[in-house]
Image: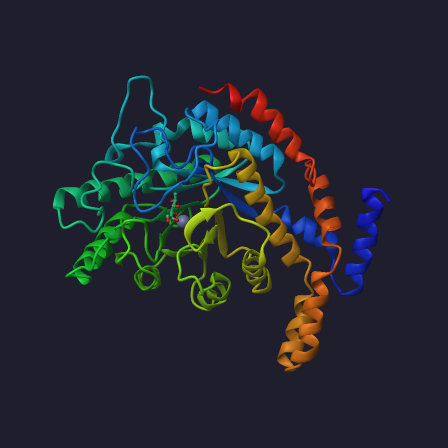
Length: 418
Ligand code: RNT
Ligand code: ZN
């Protein structure tokens, strides 16, 4: 059978269950997913020489990581060519591009330091999402930034956040696509604190100052990302789940951002998505793969990834959930890591779009849990691979031949890097 014949056969099987695979494919082509630039260089950026800090860690030293803006852009282009689907570009402030000999600290960065990224994104028809970088910097004092008791430290980071609001608005105006600006800090304590409220009160008013920076709320969507703990920050996290959720709930225009690596291991973000959708007009996600902790392994087409996509789709919330990838593996070929992760989320979305949700919901409402179980199990055996292949072909990529290209790129480009 040819690929087309296999797709036609699959389409017919799905149609018998009331699923229109052509419509699912067409829909997925419109869903923007934010591709994080930081898989390409192990979350380093271009504005400092020091190590990655803030309680996050990359492990591994696979050769060929991008060390300059040109290399990173070249690598992103490679990933764009290898992945189907609509993308936004997700940048961190530490990826500012300075002129030769120029250095501007994070409290003073300006839109012009991201002009090259705007040019890059526009030429590829992508919107841009943004993140102030509250880590890997010598102004992180005793593990704290926005919640620091030291006035000068806090001020520096508030100014950084405000500068990032201005840059986010610039991105939105230039690209014509709203910019999601995510605030995450690794602020916390390694050991048992004496004061858990003080840092949270300072964090709260600092974020309030940042989002008070004048901006058009249709163009800039500030988010707060929570976390349970970080490496070296095991006992106390200022921006905990309750803190971030309460902040977003009480501040108009501020979105809660859930990273599925940031909860206790038995909690699942798939269940939290509909809980938040009952209250927030929009939410944001960082899609990752936690292995025992917030390890940021490459996203796979695994059960929880699929479950998260299912919730977004069956809640009818595709337009209300801002989806971004967030993982960084330095132990394998980074282009392959990036590609596998992006493709996995695409697969999860496509498979969610190929589910007979209305029928399944009716079974639940009729309390027919017997048939519901049978139908849900039946869906797992459907010829989804043929639908996926058709989607890839329609998007001008291949379902599995992409890896040969990664290997060519490794030999001809990555291996030649210093
Ligand atoms: C860290 C958070 C945060 C970062 C990125 C680089 O635990 O997940 O989102 O991974 O901003
Ligand atoms: Zn995250």
